Image 1 (cartoon, rainbow, N blue to C red):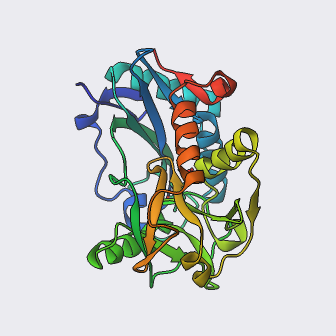
Image 2: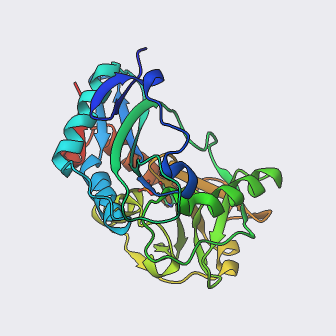
Length: 300
Ligand SMILES: Cc1ncc(COP(=O)(O)O)c(C=O)c1O
């Protein structure tokens, strides 16, 4: 399968998209990135990019933070991404990785006086947490205090520390606390609990990335199941007592959490509400629910 990138304003084979070693963002994390899912619908022989517009809106917001004057509008970014994915002729689930970055080959910690560029590439990617249900550990590494967090490459180092700590401790994923010690999120996912039949999730004040999957789940729970979501601080010990817990993210979709810090959550199996949401979400992202067709951009 041919893989392509859109790089320095043109499409080219992914293997030819190369950056110089002095490129500013490699050294200081001065880039904004996104992750967009392409979901293959085998009956329709169609590939749908999910909530692409919202991802590029979030990228534009991140560019404001980093003083990156992105020369492409959201609509142009969407068009380029559809063309890129179409060229790769994918017939499977994939991931699109756009990056807006400080492209000058210039060292020195700053945001000003640097050029910027945009690149995007796509590659086949199945489930991120390749398990039915995750075993998680609360990390000793906390989320940085920036509120609410933009998806900036330089902010991900604590997440990487947390993820590897979790894996080395025998877990599948880390749960990070906020700088104030409240539950924040996974290393690459938002977190929800089920409590008295309602969803509970941390808010932007807990330093989380305001996930697009999080937003999707809040809307689907309300519209399809009549379940409300309460946004509030969550104490660490509340995790252990939750009826259900799950993680949400573009890469991870909805991943049930069976265990936290070696304590079973609920029955230790996939909870009833989690299971219902997984089914609804899976239909929506594959373009099988016409009510949410606006969220799905067909590639072919
Ligand atoms: C730290 C973090 N939190 C949450 C999320 C979930 O965000 P989204 O649903 O927009 O993918 C991600 C995924 O990119 C992430 O990296």
